[in-house]
Length: 84
Image 1 (cartoon, rainbow, N blue to C red):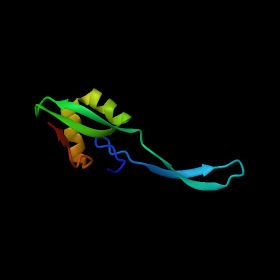
Image 2: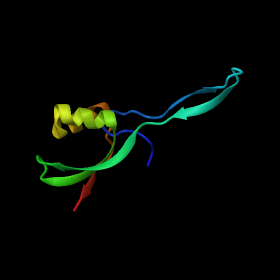
Image 3: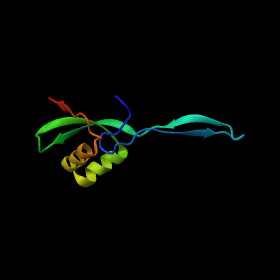
């Protein structure tokens, strides 16, 4: 799966490593992603999301249902894995 947060849509950025001699080489700034299971009360089921630390703070602030609805509206949430 690609390195994109399913809640916030954050993905890796590209930049430069700059050495002491100012030589520039490409590098990637990856997102702090992890896979986490949540219990979705409104659907009465467990789901698994790949989220960033910022996405986890968003879920804590808004609630799981509101965060999922906002992510789906923005187009970040393409697929939800339901866990039996």
